Image (tube, rainbow, N blue to C red):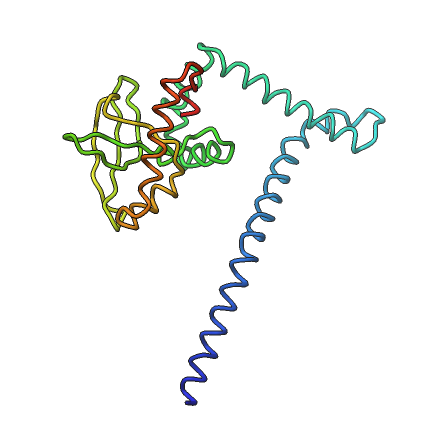
Length: 217
């Protein structure tokens, strides 16, 4: 009886401590990231703000002007990248020099993810036709020439699976959330009606007079 009491007490302490960490740790990490970003912005602004040191202006206004210059510079770089020649130059510099820097590629991918510029490979749920059998899968790569690379997880362990390189006509894109599709895999097929309902919706949308754009599908 005494042993059970200490076991329950230890479990209570562990679960309570973990529960507190789950609440406080994300908040702490968020605060640290915000502080880091503010310090980074301050470092960019500081050299520009010094240019106005001889002008009698409020300190806050000087910082505001410096921040505006930084934003304008980023905007101009963005305009250059949007052009075909500018994008080609940036891609060349990335491949030739920047990609060779330690951790640069990882940082670049992380920034793209934060700003929503990098599409999650597992965000596109599909039904892939392999030998006449429809399988639930996720598009992991698009070769841009009509061939899709699809990962088909095995049930009930989705960390294992098969990789298929299939033609475009073998893939049916679904308007299904990845977590819903993954739930059917873990549940060995339970609830798979949501996948086929999405297939019917996509088919009807394609046959309707008003078509959806590919990005909506």
